[in-house]
Length: 314
Image 1 (spheres, rainbow, N blue to C red):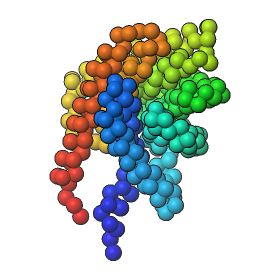
Image 2 (image 1 turned 45 degrees about the vertical axis):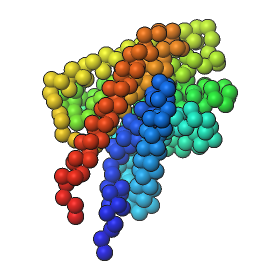
Image 3 (image 1 turned 45 degrees about the horizontal axis):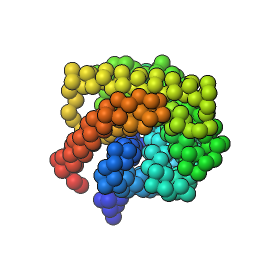
Image 4 (image 1 turned 30 degrees about the vertical axis):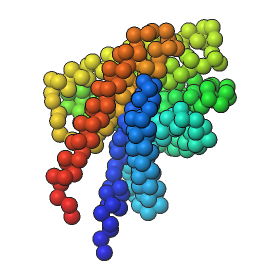
């Protein structure tokens, strides 16, 4: 007897599908920051539902298909499990659900070293944009830890966030050395993570800069680091957008969700950093970029629906 169609659907999802959770989750955060709370909650429902589906598939492979589980765990895309969990936890913390957010932080922190080491051990000389997920996952931990630290007033979480932030920047440099820059013109979508990794670094930096734990020279250093990473992420944004316009790639690919996530993350980083770094024009810039990201999410979702409708069902 053949498996149920629904089971075939979620069991066949690759780790790269975790970027869809990341995309919806960060849009939910950004929409909350601009006061579009109903849209924010709708995006949160989508992110939460997708996270549960992917968690079920992850668990099923761990229990019933160890071979596939190990093969997928060795890829950088597996780190979307960590990044998606931290993004979801961050939005839930903003809702005031601190115990749930803390549980997600613990889960992400447990998964992180296992998946990080597996991915790094299987790095190649030339890597796609997914290589930068080592940075994204680490900075996701920094963001969630910093947000929770501010919410529950626990200073050691701020120190943990700082450690993750610094380590994430080192991982970005290591990934950049291995990145195949031909992906800028040829990539299927995940090449945008090259800029998204810096955007989430800027978001982490903005949360740390806003923390009362850091004063004096430490605060100044964090402010500078936030501004530098944000400026670099905006530079990547312009470069990658120009490459998209030069070589149009309209076909749907799961990795296109890894394009939407950096778009939303760059917008959210601008919105979040404006206050802590004292640069007011980042707010209107962030709002413009946010609605561009929302449009990109809708287009990607429409492409997904069109692709599934045109695919013969067995």
